[in-house]
Each structure stands twice: as C-alpha cells, then as structure tokens.
Amino acid sequence: IHNLWVKNMVTKLEQSLNEYSSTSPKDRPKEQARGLNEDPYNLAQKHYVNQAEYIFDGAEQVVKNIVHYEDLTKEFDLLMKEYGLEVRIPPKESSGTYTNQKKKLTYRDLDEESIAAINRYAAKDFDLLGYKKVDKFRPDDEYSLKAELR
Image (cartoon, rainbow, N blue to C red; front, side, top):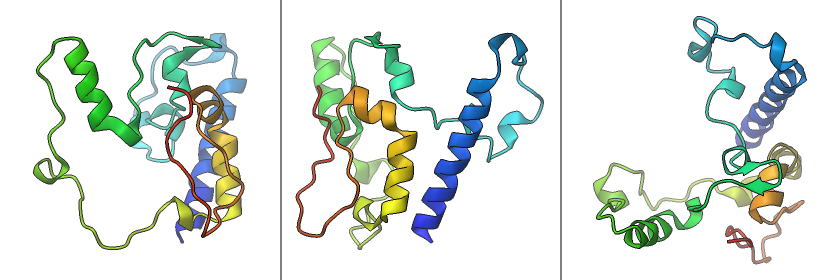
C-alpha cells in the first residue's frame, strides 16, 4: 500500500506540474480559480513544489541560508544564533510532533519503482542540493540522508 501511494502521488504530481509547465504564461489564469485549493489532488498548486524552486533561479542560488530538514533543529539554532535572534525550535516531545518509537515505515521500505518515480520527480532537488540518488536500498548498505552540498 505504501509503495502504491507513493507511485500514485508522484505520478499525479508529475502530470500536474507538466500540464502547468506546458501552458504558456500568457495563457495561465491571472487569478486562482474558485475552489482550487479545496481540491486535494491538485498538488501542483500546493506544497509539493521541489525545494530547488525556492532556492535557485535557474542555476543561481538566490537564498543565502539553507536549513536542511535532516538537521533542522541544529542548523536553525545555529542560524538564529548567527543573526543574534533568541528563537529556537521546541523539542519534538513538547510540540505535539509524533515521537512514538514503534517501528514505522521508512525510506528503506520503498520498492525500486517508487524510488525511480521519486528520483524523476525530485531530480532538481537531488542534483542542486547534493542528495544522493539510489536505484534500490540494500539491507546491508550504509546510506546517508544528508546532502553532500552544504
């Protein structure tokens, strides 16, 4: 079920973004259509834009500071300290974040077809942000979730 959901969602994302990209900017609606955000399947208009789209303008990095999700608390705290701000991310346990230690699905549960779909869809993120692409997760292989470019 997990892999089927991933494949379906990534396929829908690809189709929505390809349709949007293939439409000439002059032919795109100037105002958002009524009810558009109410459609949970129109993901191209929601939060599923590749992160590279927010950070780069073509090949030029336009965002000075990048905070990586895999080190969110540590990097955010360092950034706030650098700017002299007393802002911190609260611990997961006190902020209502799911912290149950029971076994749950991880990236290692993805099958090759799901991995290929993610690699296609997030190619810009992998390439521009320095994340390693894989074709398959092997049980004994070490794999880092951290970006190689910092």
